Amino acid sequence: MVPGCKRRACGAVPGMCLAVALMSAGTGAGAASANGVASATIVSQLISLPIVIRFSVAPSGSYVATPEVSGPDKGDQLPESVEESWKSLIQMDAAGTATFSIAGSVTSNYTLQTLGAGSGFAALDSSGDERPRPEGPASGLILPAPALTEGDGLSFVISQSLTSALGELRVLVQYN
Amino acid sequence: MKSSARLTIIAALLGGFGISSALAATATGNANATVLTPITISATTPLNFGTLSANATGGTVAITAAGARTVSGTVVVTPAAFSAAVFTVLGTGSATFGITYPTGVSVAGPGTAMGVVLTGASFGTLSGGSLAFPVGGTLTVGANQAAGAYTGSYIMTVEYN
Image (cartoon, rainbow over all chains, first blue to last red; front, side, top):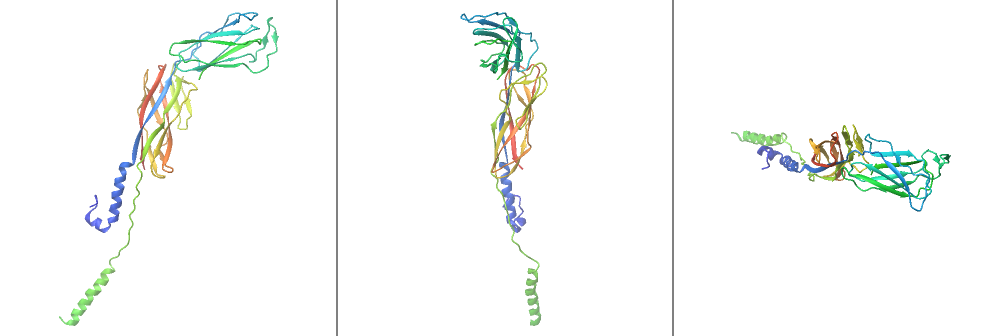
């Protein structure tokens, strides 16, 4: 006998009871579950300490002046990108090296990009007189940076030919 | 009893059978049943809020089911990859199903666990027996949340309507 069906009812309409039985059998396969995963990676603040840019010249080169340029004190916590700019009175005649450091506690790589002259500031010659801004795109030297662990600092050394008079050297650091 | 009376009774009885057949009728009925393919669900893409910094106050990171991300408070996100979750449901034809989202979801890691509220559609309709549907969520980030990787799991449930 089909479950749930009275004898009289089944005798009268047996097909209906068969339909009920089939529907009951299908309920157990009507639901399913799956495990999902949620994740997030937390990094500490990217803090820019005073950045010192030192220009030095290769032994074979010569230069007009190489003062040590200190950046402004950025004690405030900054967002994911840091952009610093200083006016430089340096005119480089030969290959130079810009060395700077950025302190931060990060767990992911970030890139470094130097933005050369041509940001709106006029170039200065050795006499301090303004010169026409060099034509052409800004120097887009992008350096991939290694990963840092918590509390580590990092120093970069960028070597490139600085043959143009520099009115400003801008450095942009941002997370990848 | 006179034979004529017997005949009358018999005739009446015979006629009665004819009369009772008018009190009954039959018809053909149909019974139908639709057997559905058992519904299944599988996780295709995890819910990833990406890489972020809580900073002094903390806040929230929200990812919509469409994959758009917004932040609040002092939370700052990096360009690193992030994504809404995607689940794939298999079943019968164009059947509809309800979606149940769990509560009390969190991600754990080096610091205090962070709560996650899942968001998305409440039902879906299969097409050709399958459907991939997205799941978003809102992550609550604590002030100065400790750096590191945080993960958690949850259970998504679907059921035929």
